[in-house]
Image 1: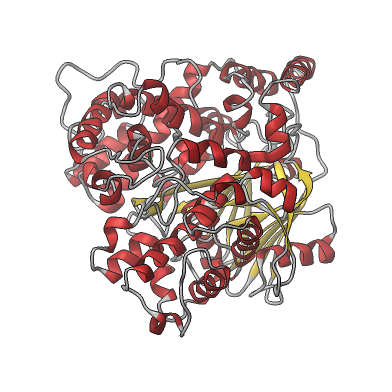
Image 2: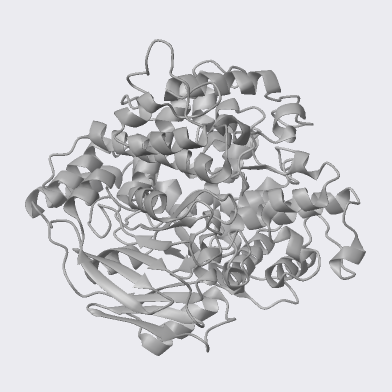
Amino acid sequence: MDGFGGTTLRINLSTEEIERTPTDPEFARSWLGARGFVSKILYDEVPRDADPLGVDNLFIVTTGVLTGSFCPVGSKVGFGCISPATNGHADSSMGGHLGPELRYAGYDLIVMEGIAAGPTYLYIDDDTIELRPAGDYWGMGSLELEKRMKKDLGDDFQIATIGPSGENGIVFSCITHDFGRQAGRCGVGAVMGSKKLKAIAVRGTKSLPVHDLDSMYKLTYDIIQRTKTHPNMAPWQKYGTAFFVGWSNERGCFPTKNFQETYHKDWEKIDGERLVEDCLVSDKACFGCWMNCGKYTRARIPGKPDTYQEGPEYETIALVGGSCAFTDINHVAYANHLLDDIGMDTMSGGSTVAFAMECYQRGIITKDDLEGHELRWGNIDDFEHFVRMIAARRGIGDIFARGTKGAAEALGRGTIDFASQAKGMEFSGYDTRWYPAQLLSYCTCDIGAHHSKSWTITTDIELGRDTIEGKAEVVIYLQHIRPLFDTWSCCRLFWGELDVTPEEHVDSIKHLTGWDVTLEECMRVSERVWNLNRAHFIERNGGPGRKFDVAPARHLDEPIPGGPAEGKVVGRENFEAMLDDYYANRGWDEDGNPTREILDDLGIGYAADNLEKLGFLGKPIPGGIPKVRGRELKPKAM
């Protein structure tokens, strides 16, 4: 099959049985890969009452249709499971080199079930597949382990690891690869750890069959020539995502002190310019990328060992640096290394510590809860001690190992009001009180709050930050186009920043596979995935769906105290009106439940049958379903 490795693996970790089957061409065309594969497999195969950290959950590693090709940029690999943070569908992707290496070994998809008898790692060397003991590796940090395994196996192996956080089931644990690439969201590292799977090591030496190599070469060459002189290329190459700090701060959406504020007065001490001047060692790129936006850095803090890490990128600077109120880029970089090695998502990890800092500020937790330590804003020693408490689940660290929602539910005392999360997933690095579309994006996201599925800050600016008109339709469009890159498994920055069009990505798919595919077809797949994930979440958690699309009180009721967005707040009435508009444009009923009409139209009527049995199928929509539902090819919006 052109464009694919050709083989799907099924691995039972309990019995150590390994099954190889040809990748199904019809399945590949219907779901396109990665996020799509995960959505369908989880829906079909995981019992609705399965414990996310139990034996019945699946752990999926998957490529997408463009992984390993030299389109711009087919570097991604996806991971999937039921999330321990949200109890819903989880898909999380990362760049680097693991996905292409898996393709070059001949594999498109790995589905793992059961739980290994003891610490284990998956070894793949072309046709050799083994489950090997990992007892000597258990307890090691993610970064430390990757270095050790490359020494043990060879530098030409691509390796993904978890740290102690994943071993101990912290719900925001990540998977790390290439010394700084993470599948960070949804707690996929915790599920990997629950399977007793410490690492995945892959070496592939095969080629990827291409349907029309000459056309694919020409398309990619033309894109390279055009994008290397694009005005956005130079700042991305110099600073990576860290250059965005000042932009967000000036526009009043930079999270500061657990989203209490949206303007960091010392932002210049933690921005991209300071990162390059104080910490940069070298640039770093994922597979097939000429942007080199990764920044390999050194953190130097008196009294602590120097650390080397990739990053921090913008989201880490926002949710560790801003939200925890650091004022030294070296401290942010050191915290980045700490979280990466322990195996925590820096986004949810930073937010969880910031939430705890506000609890300490308010006297809700005290030094007695912190083993005699404090938890002060901007203090790296306090930050490190508390992170280690969480990782080991010591004392009150066990409560915060559940994330901000779980911790707030345990603590009570109104803490849920200032936990910036949706469905159990912490907000990305943008405050929403002057950005209503972004708030809607977070609260309706199928995996829990995450900017990668819909980032609408520029849309809010362009349409007016004080209005809600027209926002829902754009959110839906972005919730289809942005996750499509996770399905294709390529980097969305070339679309968002360098004006490589979605149509050019579809042309790459045509040249690679020989499929007569269109962008409209791909957008329809993305809409199908979104609706299937919605149905799956309701089936697992009950309904109606609207009760889960809830915004934190801080983002609805608490005006911003100062800075460029002073006095701004969305308001409950506006938010509920946006939800109504969103459901109407999606073809769901006013309770946020998908309707039979929409699910049948997307070819997933079986989900309607399941929702109907549970009593959560949406009521028929007067006047019929919307015909477009955000799939029209709008001008580029990030």
